[in-house]
Every structure is written in C-alpha cells, then in structure tokens.
Image (cartoon, rainbow, N blue to C red):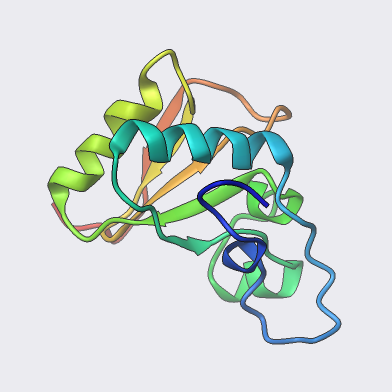
Length: 126
C-alpha cells in the first residue's frame, strides 16, 4: 500500500466478513506517509475506514470522514508525541482537520468538509 503502512491497518474493526467499509483514500495515505517522515517515529493507526454500523458503535458522527476513507486516528502514547504530530500536521499544512483525544489524534483530509479546524473530543482530560 505504501512505504510505511499496510492496508490491514486501515480496515474496519467491525468483525463482519461482509463489511462494506471503503478503502482508505490514496491522498490520505500519502499524507500519512509524509507525516511519518516528519515525526521520524512509527505511527500506529488505531482506526481507519469504518462501516456505518461500526462508526455508530464507536460514537462517530453521522458524516464521519472515516466512512468515506478520508480519516485516520493515530495512537498517542504521550503528550510529547501528540505535540510532534500536531506540529507536523500544521506545517505547510499537511492536515488541516485535526481532532485531539486523550490517547489519539484524528486527522482527515476530506475535501467535502471545512478545512482549518481543530477540536477536542468530549471526555478528553487535560
């Protein structure tokens, strides 16, 4: 799929062998490759594409970019790594849609959504 990522990392976690989740969009994967190069550390995708059923189960919004293959959630084991990811995302900018969770960073490049937004997921503790 790419130099740093495998398709399996982006597959829906619903467990249904007939899952209809879309494949990740090529521009998303290309940007994630650049992000990986910029941070100089491995990146773990904890959520990529999702079918509607799994998106609802995990509390995703109805129009989630995960359902169209434009989003990924990256595991953030600590605050310094989260900062490095955000810094690398906004440089040039690589990603201009970023969500901050307690243990993950959501990035997407969905062309149908407003750019230049940053949000925090409810329940995220400071």
